[in-house]
Length: 417
Ligand SMILES: Cc1ncc(COP(=O)(O)O)c(C=O)c1O
Image (cartoon, rainbow, N blue to C red; front, top):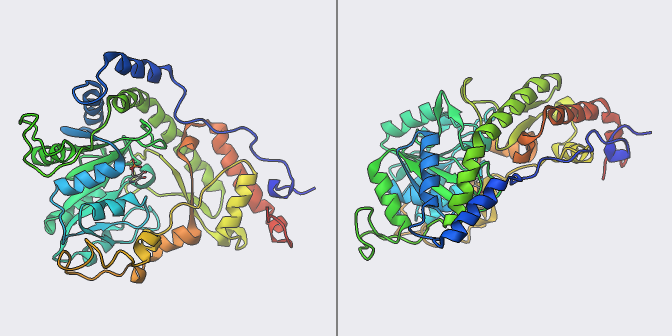
């Protein structure tokens, strides 16, 4: 009788995983209040309330609610002065919007490799990518784990660059005792369905800088200015606004966030400790020991050598069969067709007269990112962190079971699902 579930053995975990969004009556109550108020868009009170809660939670002075995280990134880039001709440094291990938002702002993304221990942009590699065209750096708090902001800010100040924090996955995360979001010049958050705070879709820009706030507000509000009239359009702006329904959902999620955050962190810490029993699998490392990750994702490092050379993807199939669904995660962004296929490189904003540099994404090489995407990393979804300690034990037990029964996977046809 085989032991591994992929070969017909018993599954490690029969129970499912928590649902998301959470089943909570507060969402309906807030939505009903918006519906009945008759004010579903501008001049409603819920987007303002959501903004105040986000600012307070993250220790930021100003916030601008927007339609999506992708929009928040584009607005943040424009608000710090990114324009055609500029380059923005971004990591390649992230969601595509981190890079395409740069293109939406008319500039060119330049990829800088990540640190293979933390999966965050590697500050040691930023300086060599800076040119006279560089205007900004986007640091992504990947998986919810803060990027190493101190050296990033130091490099940015030295070279007069703006820093955008991509906080889409990191609501409430803490870097060296400080909440993320307004450590850099501006933070961009997402409230898309999978995020730790969600309204189905939505985003927010946070900043401590009144000028960045004012520019962001104008870009989102069809070029009006905060102190101006309704038909007073002084800036080139669009309608990137959030609805009151989104604001109402965010308000409830923000009330739930502290308990969720604590549960995710407790489970994450326990999982990290339990993984000490498993050779070859480790959680993403923190960039500073006292950081607290938002644990949007549980991101793991995988060393096939500790599994008799078992390829990561075969390991993940075996894990799924054990009742532990895992994902391979991202591709290096410069390998995505939108960048690698070169079809856009003759177009705005990649060509003269807009851009005077040369870009060929097929020649980019970020070895740490490639290793993690191709074979050395995987993750579990954000719902994982809301499960209980038993679930964390199940994750580790499944890994140990696979490791102890590798013979079953090396046999002809074994584990070929
Ligand atoms: C790191 C990162 N940046 C940006 C985004 C874009 O956010 P949205 O989907 O709300 O546009 C996401 C999520 O989708 C993300 O994970």
